[in-house]
Length: 348
Image (cartoon, rainbow, N blue to C red):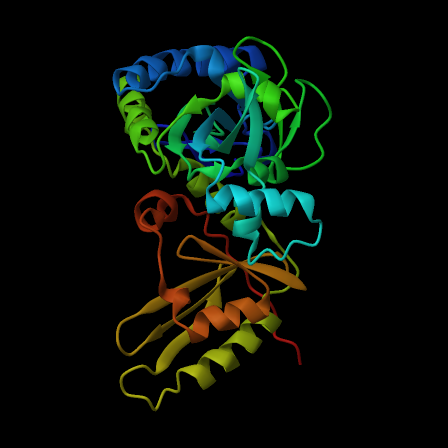
């Protein structure tokens, strides 16, 4: 056995090969489940006053099988003589327009002139995204969250969308398909029929997502299970190299940062065992820092939080973040840490 992982119900599962623990649902099964989700979501939106139908939704799939997204493109009408429209027009006609921030750029570039009944009209276009996460062990949804509204320009910049089964280049690349089985239009004018008119700062979609989650049981799942599994996989993996040089360097830093002469915050009982460096302060705080990865460029895990590199770990020690713990570390992760005895000869 090489360790443990956590399933969607929050139960620990013994695993023999950490590289082969992931359960990936077939793409067609994932599509069917997303369609069912949309079919439960749509009536709730309609009853709240939104003029929306199921065919307006777009589905995104991550090839790794963990993440899926349901996207509803939204539109808000603007007056043609409004300052926002004037700014957007200026920005679209001047390549050197002085945007004040990336946020302003994304907002203004998401304002479009679209022909409606042969008449030019102005609209602000956004993407309303619901992100669903599956447990890596059993492939069951553990969370579904309505993300913050994102300007359409920012959506296009953030995600690379491909047709199903096309090669994927990055973690932000998703396979994309509409509920009608068609590809997403590239032109915003062609996308216009898929857009729903949603009031600014509306909570209608978020409220509906919460209701669907309760109805189908997502709310009862362990939304932290993948984080816990990732933490356990890292902590239970072997350290490549010797821990003593790192222990010596961090011990000196801890002693300087928390001098023992300080009656309130002085550090004592600084030690290392089982791939972990431990110490405590006179005020009662304790730290257990697991050292993983490569000793030349280590990754540290403390209380469920991951820190990369010695410099970052020193900063976490100095600012007290090494004493933090996630809400799940003591109860869900700590009982399944494999305590491996490790003894090194100190260099002469």
